[in-house]
Image (cartoon, helix red, strand yellow):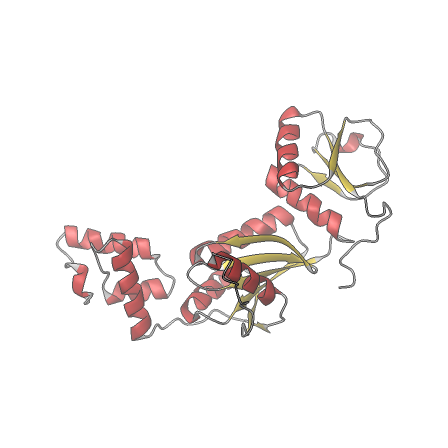
Length: 280
């Protein structure tokens, strides 16, 4: 993609420099850079900055003391966010680069973060954690723009995630996810890999913009599945009634909240044993 990757003046040996006298910042950033296996050097304020340094990390109080011809300066925030920003700055030409987040919906959605063609982070979270995760990603990387592309499978989960993202003000595209889930060989023993790869593929497909929140009206079968899930989640002690299952389907409650409400109603004599799943 044009305009995404920088033309390197430092050739293929570009590195990040951490320049600070703050020992606490030094320890945290060095540990994070090492965990990402990023090439870096550490310098004191005033030391010569080598020509192959492409990004400098420093503190706000020390930034004005750094004499450097480069323009990719990252001010320390927290270790993860700071290193994320440094990596992103090292990978793109200008701070106006767009970011795409792909979401493979399901019981545990896969989430992939792309800058240009490069995958810079992957996650797997619950459906209710997708929107907070996207907010954290935006905080950590601070892209000029972000688009969330979500697959059109798992109707209820997809709608819940879309509504939460739109409500938070994000741009969302709905993607036809046909063919995005790869074949997983017998030697791969986790579905997480499949979900993550599907999320990466979804992120790379232009979808249809979603302009407004959607109504969620679960079918009887979908409500039944949620009721069965509540029984399994509570180890057979409670099956939430249909009206609570409907609220879970609409994203108004989590299944744990619905179970707690149902147990509370039974304890107070306002509900009934949930084993048959009928509305009280």
